[in-house]
Amino acid sequence: MLLLHDTATGEVAPLRLRSPGKVGLYVCGPTVDGIPHLGHGRFSLVFDVLRRYLLFSGLEVTYVSNITDIEDKIIDRAADRGIPIDEFTAINEALWWEIMDALGVLRPDEVPHATAYVDRMIVLIGDLVAKGVAYETATGVYLSVLDVPGYGLLARQPLDSLRAGARIEADEEKRSPLDFVLWKKAKPGEPSWEAPWGAGRPGWHTECVVMSLDLLGEGFELHGGGQDLTFPHHENERAQAVADGKEFARHWMHNGWVTVGGEKMSKSLGNFTSLADLLARSDARAYRLLVLRSHYRSPIEVTPDTIAQAEAGLARLDELARRFALSDLLAEGPPTGPDAAVGELDEEAVAAFIASMDDDLDTPGALAAVFDLARQANSAADAGDDRGAIRAAGTANLLAAALGLRLQGVVDDAVDEVSATLVRQRDDARAAKDWAAADALRAELEGAGWLVEDSAEGTRIRRR
RNA sequence: GGCGGCGUGGCCGAGUGGUUUAGGCAGGGGCCUGCAAAGCCCCGUACAGCGGUUCGAUUCCGCUCGCCGCCUCCA
Image (cartoon, rainbow, N blue to C red; front, top):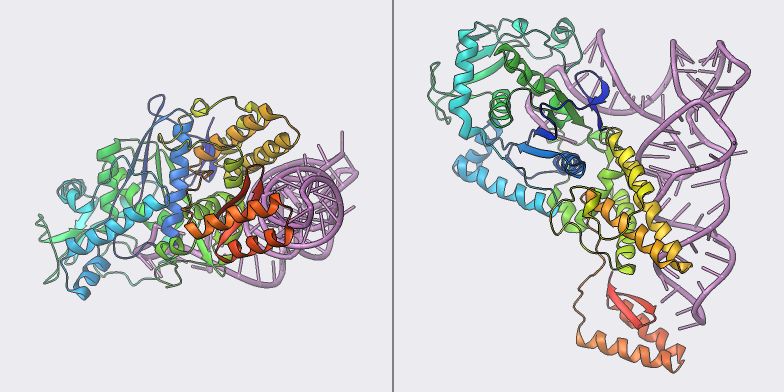
């Protein structure tokens, strides 16, 4: 049984489903105000892996992840560029999906956009005002957190202590410094929607409540996001649902940061590396492997060195796929269980993998199972045990696929005429035992960027 | 000020009250190879420091030091 850490309780607990076999998962998506960075990549990969594992466990998953396409920074940046907001957000969203595709992140089942939900947000805000838990001021409509039972659940702090820590000057009109804006009244020139409280736009925390409840229904199973969304974003989402008398997420999951020199990577610190830059200089699968190598709640340090380590590990798995001509199990979509495998399985390894993943997504342990299988496969093959070798390799392929990791056994490197000639010449030289010539030809091929290997079928080259 | 997390062998990074190891990368030795590459085998007696609990702690408790995060937009 799958156990997951729940931020609301601080404990690792079984996921409680509303109906057997079905899981609704809402993950806070990006604000499309610029280029996505490594942090966005991590949360996307972490929840992609979770989603894939839920599928692998035989569950029917509805994965919803939003696009925040109206927000202060979006307004500012679009204005800076002198282009309409919708054009600006469309450009950034297209970039987002392009990068997600490159990372092998499955597209969500539903992608709600904040701007498409403003009407329903206005309805929620109206309800909250009618119930007396929200109130209007000169600048907008606010939620009174003192009226929300259990406020501070996700922050895991009592309300008093949160209030004591508030570092921001309170709006004079706010009843509590922790009260947050549901509706921002528009200043001249700002984009706005008509509402009972005047033209304006919704506060950030309102969109996710409305969209998640609309698409997944009350009491949906899982709500996730980066750790920095825990408070106040998720706290405030929950507060609105609770204040509106709705059952909200049953289980909260938050992933750790990407760090740079030990510090959190963030837009505000400006210490971020864009995913586009990363993908330009490394195998997209390396980042997935890097993310999988550590537990999702731990911080990960992304450096050229850790990326290189991941790429080296990947090369080892690719070599396995090459040696055993493993098929691409992801071609038909995410594996929905061990049955997706081709051929016999190493049941013990599958069980070890499942035990790791069931334990709050222990991907490092799951990965260890994959690497163990790789060694076993090679070892068995070296010993002439073909059946055992193929079983281990096939199992490794399945488990890697379950994690969204595609092993590339066949690389269709176009071999140019000159290189092909060098290969033929080298085979001739080796046949004639002219080692000096063979070595010289190898050096020449390597100089041209090829990785040269001898095999029973003769010289093999591939791009390195 | 309030709350929380972390400190593991050269590097990354899991895990656990004790007979036997996470795993990966790098490194050393060996096998294989004409030489390589790939692969396989062997090798590192690590758990911040100081106390305590215990027959026994890296793992439990306390303290100290160091690092980080949230309480503000942020994945």
